[in-house]
Length: 64
Image (cartoon, rainbow, N blue to C red):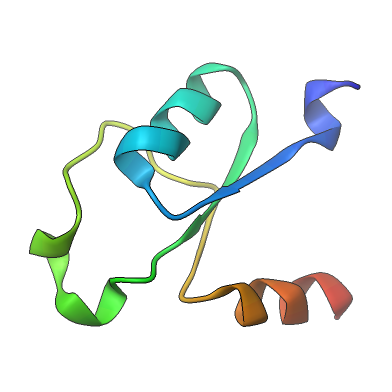
């Protein structure tokens, strides 16, 4: 499957998004800790292509 057809969805920027981006994958970060503030997540050197607060939001975006 071509990398352009893969979307990596994960709740950890530090453990998942950084690695997926380094492999050339498109990424969505499910930021489950958004309400807890910046200190709730480890700093990372990579940014996701999209950030959502939950999977329900992601599903609504993909069905729209």
